[in-house]
Structures are given as structure tokens and as C-alpha cells.
Image (tube, rainbow, N blue to C red; front, side, top):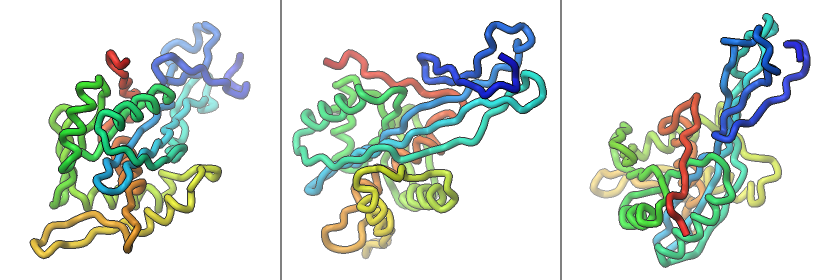
Length: 240
């Protein structure tokens, strides 16, 4: 293979992607690692359904045209899966999430750990499901302590809006229910309570924006929680 040939990427078991060198000594020292991984967002329903949204995060190495020199190409983040789940038992929901994650390679999971999400996070811990536990607050900051994340609702929303507006985040053209998701994102807004606290809400009766919140959590994982060069390999530890 020469650097002029169309690159055929090699997908490693840990989710990284490389260009083949065919053991050519001239390629030594020029290896650049890309990746393919999946960021999963889970919004925990209270009286309304829970929602799961998956964003595929891809970035492939490419030749620069100068010998074996390589660089990373454009990063692409695409919504490839979404669903709403009406399950009231934390155990049943954790079991459903585990079955979904078992079908997704190289994933990270971010959940809404606000309010009732705290006990559900503990349920996931007992089930051996690694995750980011994201608590939404007022203000305008983000902080992390281990797997626990505190993020301002304004930042969560603005981060999603910027991704969609700039094209850094797109929705697969053949995604089932794509228009429903777009409608939820359009209704996804911040409102102020009488106490001056910001709350996330959908636009109008019957619009809970569950999938919009799940998408915002998944994209927060892309932009703020996981490394941009190495996939955070999450696993189902001891799950049965």
C-alpha cells in the first residue's frame, strides 16, 4: 500500500481506528488514532416516559499527502437511535438499559441524576452499569467529581443548540421518529420559577421533551465528559 491509495481503515477492538501500514518501516512514528464510539443519554421519566438517545461519534485518520504523514479528519456526531420507554420499576428500566447497551459497541452512558435520578443511579451502580450521573442546576457552570457531574441547565441547553446550529451534531436522515425529536428540540426551553430557579420544560401540554433532554445529555458526554482522542471504554461489569 502507498500513501496515494484510498485508505482502508482498521478498526481495533478498543474502538480506535488506524490506517494500515502493512508493516512498512517508513510508516513508523506516523500512526494517528481515530475512533468510533457511542454516547448514550438517558432521561429518567417520572410520570412521563423515560427516553434513550444514542449519538455516534466518529473521527478517522487520513493521509496528508506528504509521505506517510497522517492527521485526523473531520469529527462527525450523528444521532442514530432514540426511543421512549414506559417502565416504572427502576430494576426493569436498568434491565432494559443493560440490554440496549449490550448491543452498542464502545459506549458511554450519561443519565439525568436530578431528583429521582439519584436513586436510579444507585440502581445502575448495583447492576454494574458504569455511567455519568448528571445533576442539572441553576447557574452557568459545570463541575465533575469522579463520575458525578453537576451542570447548569442553561449550559446543557446551549451546548446542544450550538451543536445543532453549527452542524457539529446532526440527526441521521433515516432515523425513525426524526421529526418528533426535532419537534421536542424546538420545544426545549428554559423557564423561570417564582423562586427564580431555571427549569427545563417542553413547549406546551403533552410535550415533555424527554428525548431532547436525553440528546442533550448524550451530546454533553461528547463535548465535555469524554476524551476527544481516546474512547472511554465503558463495560457492563458483572451484569447478568
